[in-house]
Image (cartoon, rainbow, N blue to C red; front, side, top):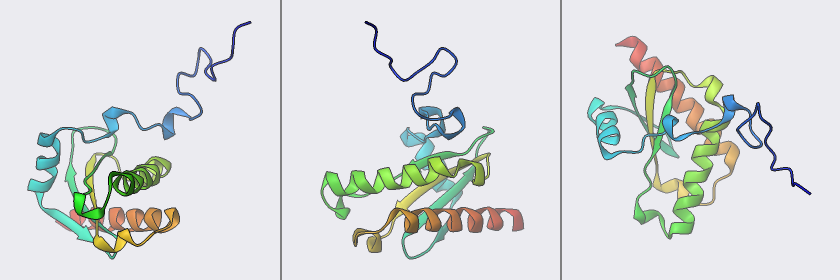
Length: 136
């Protein structure tokens, strides 16, 4: 008997709709990509996160996350990255396309933060950063 894998011929993404997927093409992965965003030097911050933004040639937003080793063990750092990726993934429709976003958590994020706080913080910063770009 053949087991069902959760995918159908028309849907290659298991358990998610394609609009909410987060493939590698929507991530900043190379050192060159990270440096390009940092070189643009457009930064906004709040109590939890610092967000750097740069325009890209894609018609979708891309996310990069940088969590320094000062945040604790790999378990702690990876949890922060998972929270940030999930906040970005769930809100791709509200995040303006055509930009690269680099997120760096601030030290206050170490003190056990909830997903909703991270999501609200990320969306607030994205809107502030895009507003700053529009003024330039």
